[in-house]
Length: 319
Ligand code: UDP
Image (cartoon, rainbow, N blue to C red; front, side, top):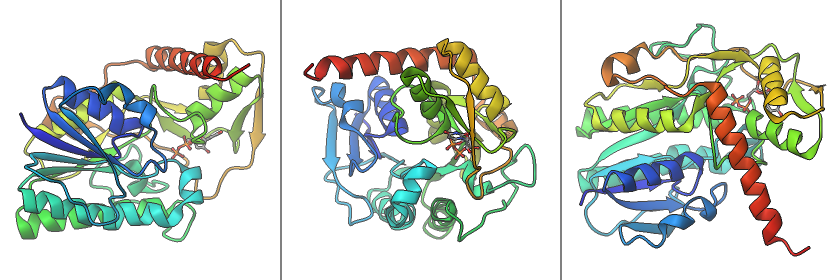
């Protein structure tokens, strides 16, 4: 049985990756310090003998007994309000955490895939974003702690590839959504759905003309799986190119949830990217991958999941 280590395994993306690798017949070792991850996301896996969980911060020395074939480094806070709250941990897990996991990969002769991000492009001046665009990042702005850690991560990963001959893969992940997002993580989809459910107005930042392109989590996991199994060491964008303004997105959530609420405008956070859309030509060519789930379908599944999640929580609370 092949053994895969997934850091951030209790998080949104990490837990979906655990599910996928279990389904593919792997032995999965998930690592998480549970700062932004949640054991509820992987509770169903604990009964499986081919699943292990280590409660550990990968910014500190990492020891994994036994052989390892693959590593997926997904540990990191990933929402702007999280990096404002825990900026130093965000920097450390992207830099020291990546260094530690590259060290494990080298010692175990494992192939490692690191989770990079569309944030390496910053507030992009090239649209849509291709992998050869170097980006427009403010290193000392509120997002700098995440963006620069991820840019360092790409640099050190390529260095291990070039100087140590390590098998490395870099995925640049664009906005992704789906079940198991945290309702309080501040990102636009859980924010809007939470507000609609609670009967509050939807908080649009700025004038809502900024754009994003949202990818359903199952599509993202498929792209990541294919990239890991490919022989391509340079960065690959994985995301859904279907672009939408945040105002239009709010309207879609209002329609989906049937809420009577309206949109309320709030100041735009500093350095909020004005536009974002992945150019996925490379993923199409190298991985034969493109997203399959429409936003309509993905949002329907995600909304249903949030409703059921909140019902379960309400039932668990004493009246
Ligand atoms: N946004 C918003 N209202 C919210 C949360 C986010 O209008 O309650 C906007 C935010 O300003 C950004 C976009 O939605 O332009 C996506 O924000 P998110 O935090 O989800 O991720 P980002 O892509 O900015 O990292």
